[in-house]
Image (cartoon, rainbow, N blue to C red):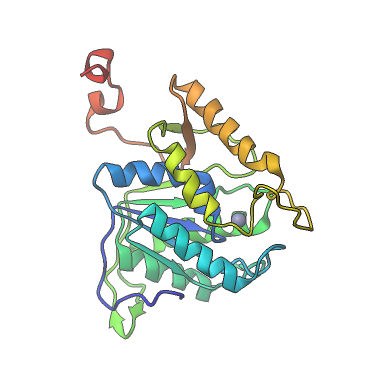
Length: 256
Ligand SMILES: [Zn+2]
């Protein structure tokens, strides 16, 4: 891990996993900022160091991930170094993720979507989905720096939208935080287009149009719920509603 986690748990409200550093900022950064603006805490865990990326080195990406965490204001950002493009379904990898879930004891977990263009994204999705469940098993013992961890099963697992188009189950209104979330994305300077940049080779994501494309999707999702910007998510299970009017709010409530 780039950041050594403490032996004792550090509880957060939301824990966002990404196969590579920058997955989280690109797909759900504005939602994470919104959560923090509501007074809740967020931690991010990158499953790999992104060392197979065409642009930049593992060291650059480590610095960029740290810079992104600072600008976004996460409680914590850690990296598991499970191997970019080697993110296999193994007991060891599964256990590493369970340890992180038990350490942060989140209510909500975010993960890569199950069906994606980059195989690491789909593999990360499967690993996090299973770890989400197994972390709650009493008989499955794990330790963190020699201390036995307590089981913990979070309440909700949400998959963010990445390269492939998905019809989201829920769309979060991120009109207030979308612009600020771009700073988190741009912290990964080696990956994206910069003004005057003549960097080679050209990749799918360092084209000038890539960031415009991301904004277009946020506008499209926003349009679906009648706001400026939105981020879409798939739910891993059925959403139970405790407060009807909080979810299905009316005009009177929205207008204060
Ligand atoms: Zn990725």
